[in-house]
Image (cartoon, rainbow, N blue to C red; front, side, top):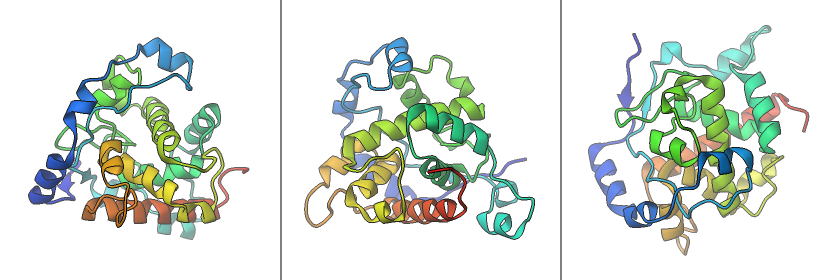
Length: 231
């Protein structure tokens, strides 16, 4: 039995929801599934549906640990082959994908939040539909979840990053545009745009989001140091 817990307080969720511009997300037309599936460079609407702010994590007993992997001679990263293959197809950095998966679900493909975010990369069904997935029940399938999770990352990094996101390194993590892209996966692109001025510089003043950017950056560096891909 998998036990979930909420990683943010009710007050944070209420505050974050108040900051989300729902009108911009709901007023744009949604492209066809075929358009996005067949062309990763297709013009997308300005924003996907508002993201969840209610983050949950799977039971630690079922999660993947970087520390245990480093101590195991025969250890391997879960779903690595799928990540490497899909990241290559979509021209996106695989270590960044792994870092997001680690933070979002600890590599648990059955993870589900109380508001419905699903699978390895904790995609909301509406976001997956916006990206072109017709059957959102497939989000519990690792390959499907990774495919559409990378699509969403590509959209966010294309929107905010000034760095080539096909091959990132440790120095890139300090780039503010990379931090903004990571933050957008957590709190939504609308919030990043709203706080894209001094003193925030694109990182919303939400405790959860600040922690999210820090941990994803940390995991990225750890995965890169493991030399999992031939960059």
